[in-house]
Structure formats: structure tokens, C-alpha cells
Length: 136
Image (cartoon, rainbow, N blue to C red; front, top):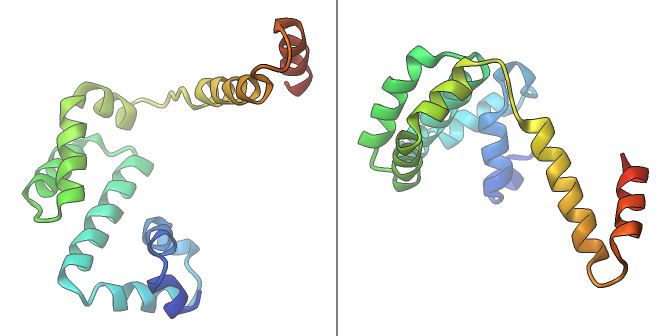
């Protein structure tokens, strides 16, 4: 990834930071190190990577310490994110701990809503039902 391209596109930089280090290309580690030279970016990178690690590796024991770090952070996006996670702590803890996910269900619901939006005002329920069953 071209350093100038990554640094000028925050979404690309965020994707790189959240990507597992073993999937980085040869230049990516140097790019992350360059970004980490700025103190606020270094803190953001550390918090983001730690959160991604604890979710990927299902490390519920690290959740409380991560929330404390994020709440003490001067970076308002992480502070707000941690505050929201703490509001629904039981669900977040279950999400990090349990192997089950409702991602498949949410995907099907999203697909159905998209089909419904596409068909809005064009047909009745019989055509929507036929289209939904054909798309499955």
C-alpha cells in the first residue's frame, strides 16, 4: 500500500491498523510505525489493535482493562465507544465470550429489507415472496 495513499484515506489506514499483523504486506509495518509517531495516533492504534485482538481471540478477561483504558483515553471516539459498550456490558461480555453469533440471521434480515426497498410500490406481496424465494 502506498504510504501517501493510506495516510490520505482514513478508512484505508483504519483497515490496515485493524488487519491482523500476519496479513500485512512488507511495507505495512513501516507505515503503521510512521503513523504511530504521532502520540494520539499511537494511542488510537494501540487501543484499536487491543480491542480487535480481544474480540478475535475471545479474551473476556481483558475486556474490563480495555474499557478502563479507553475510558481514561483523551481520544473522544474511544471514550464514547467504551461508554456505549459499558452501557450494554452483559451483551458485550457474552459476545466476546460465547461462540454463537446472530450474524447469519442479521444478514438474512438485511437482504429481505433490501429486496423490500427495491420492490416498494412496484408489486404486491406475491411478487415479493417469489423474488425472495428465488434469491435464497
